[in-house]
Image (cartoon, rainbow, N blue to C red; front, side, top):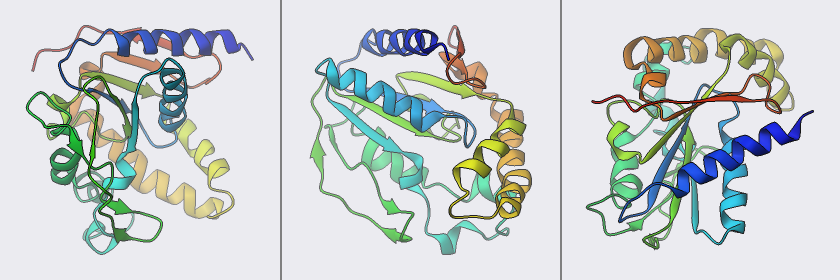
Amino acid sequence: MNQSVRDELLGYLVEAIGSVSAEHPTRVAVDGPPAAGKTTLADELAVILRARGRHVIRATIDDFLFPRAQRYPRGEYSAEGCYFDTHDYDALNRVLLDPLGPDGDRRFQHAVYDHTTDTALSPPVTTAPVDAILLFDGVFLMRPELIDRWDLRIFVSIALERTVDRAVFRERQVSSQADVERRWRERYIPSQQLYFATVRPTDLADVIVHNDEPQQPDWKVRTRKRL
């Protein structure tokens, strides 16, 4: 393993985050397919930034799901359902992204839902320092409902077929291989293909991280597309 390449990537991203000029907290999207390595990357960045004395807010799209009873009107394995019916973007904007934005009061909540218990959450409202950094990981973060809310956009790219193997390994304690493969091939991968076809997220990202080999990633800096 060439850890130095991973360290170089992390160093670049930390500097990119630090170079964002804003009079409000810096809102960083870490987008990408399921099992691409988004959470790991965001967690690594949080450790480095906190060690440098920055106030980091870690949050994830998994804490902004609709309740399970609302998520599957098209069926449990529907790709369209995954894309259109899963996430509560109104709540995400209302309690987290907009309060941390240019017109916000920095009073935010980091979650509205506990996916492990399928229950609504209402954590205490917290006030972020003006120089705080939000590291937010999840799928579909470049959607029209969210795109203007990000001050830096990172897309973690991986061959979709490779995510199946990663998911089988990651979920081996809680799901059978057959169930994981079915969910990925019928729901998650086609929903990503829909996302790519309709939104073209890599055209909207500031940095694309190619994460097929996590210890030897490659990355590309893009000129932000005008919306």
